[in-house]
Image 1: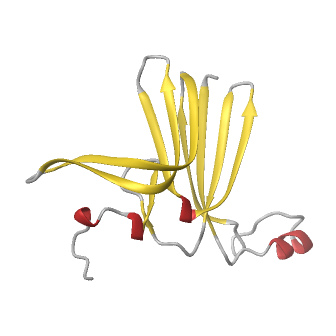
Image 2 (image 1 turned 180 degrees about the vertical axis):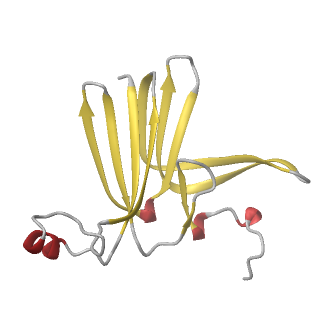
Length: 146
């Protein structure tokens, strides 16, 4: 494998496939779109790919006054890529956010389409990381009332 492409698409629960099929030859229209938005991320020079459908992701970062942190995020769909230069890239999506996963193999590599539910609130703290609100580390929440 050489290239990995991840598309995360936020579903529009008001999309009507019937309307698209009967009135627009199956195509979306400006007032009947399947997705609110799509993020497409691509990693090249991938040596290996590992997918764990039920795993833990460690969200790491640095706080300006409190220093480095690392918090576990449970119940994620975790994609780990090992690149030919020895570096690693990870993508993580809370399982409760996922409506559907579609994996396709191509001569150039792998494309993974993950459709995110419309009605599940989430945070996107880092590119390629989608964490359900109730799984987000409480220590990182600012101005949130219990």
